[in-house]
Amino acid sequence: MIISIASGKGGTGKTTVATNLAVALGNGVQLLDCDVEEPNAHLFLRPTLSPAEIVTMPVPVVDEDKCTLCGQCGEICVFKAIVVLGETVLPFHELCHSCGGCMAVCPVDAITEVGRELGVIESGHSNGVEFVHGRLHIGEAMSPPLIKAVRARTRPGGLTIIDAPPGTSCPVIAAMKATDFVLLVTEPTPFGLHDLKLAVGAVRALGLPCGLVINRADMGDDRVRAYAREEGLPILMEIPFDRRIAEAYSRGELVVTALPEWKPKFVQLFEAIAAIVKHTGAKSE
Ligand code: SF4
Ligand code: SF4
Image 1 (cartoon, helix red, strand yellow):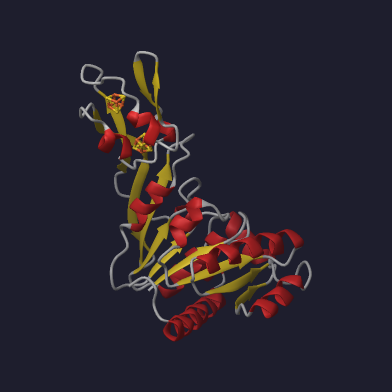
Image 2: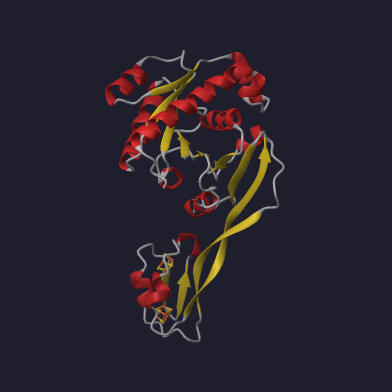
C-alpha cells in the first residue's frame, strides 16, 4: 500500500505526520521524502545516509558537423528548448523535458543525448523505517524527474509512505499519482481552507481517495470541518496545538518519541486509512 501525505501549502505539519506515522508503524515501513526542494524528514528520523547517488535527465547535444540547420528540431519542441539561431542550433537544457522529440525528427542524426544532473538520492534506516529522499540541486526547477527517481525506490508489496511537496502543481502530482490514499494535512484557518480546497481538487482529478488530518485543531474556526462534512471528506485525526509538540518539533524530535501516548493514535490513523483503502480498492497495483 502506498499512502501519500500532502498539503495545499507548506508549514501545516505534513512532515510531522509523515515521520510520526512511519515510526509509529515501524517494522520495515518505507518513507520516501519526495519534497525534493526542501527535504527535512531526515532531520527527525536521523538515519545514517548512504553515499549520494546522482540523478540525471537526458538532454540533447548537437553535432554541428552533421547538422544541416533544417530547423525541424526547433519546430517540434513546444518548450522552445532547442532553437536554430543563424548558423547554429542552441539547446536550452534547463527548459528541456527530455521527450526525445528533437532527436527523433532530426533527419541526419545530428542529435544525441547527455545526462544533465538534477540532484541526488540518499537512503538509510532509522527507528525501523527504511528511508529514501531526493535533494534537488539549488536553483534547479525540474523536480518531477527526481521525484519519479525517488518513487522508483518503492519496495513492491510493502507499506510505503510518501512525504509529498506542498502545493498543487506538477511536483505534488508526481508524488501523489498512482498512490492508494492521499492524507491531506491542513489547519483550521481561512488560508488553510483555501489551500485545502485546491489540494482536494487535485486529488479528485487523480481519482484518489483522501482524508484529512487537522493540525493545530483547536485554533482558528470551524469552516474546515464544515467543508469536510459537505464534501464527504473523513477527518481521520486532529492534533491540537500543544506546546510540548511544538517544543519536540523545534528540537528535531518525533512526537511519538517525546510524547509516547501519541504512538497508538498514529497507529489508529493508519488503521483508518487501511480500512478505506480496503473498501475503495488499491490504486497502486
Ligand atoms: S528533448 Fe524534447 S523538450 Fe528537450 S529539446 Fe528535444 S524536443 Fe525539446
Ligand atoms: S533537426 Fe537536426 S539537422 Fe535539423 S537543425 Fe536540428 S539538429 Fe540540425
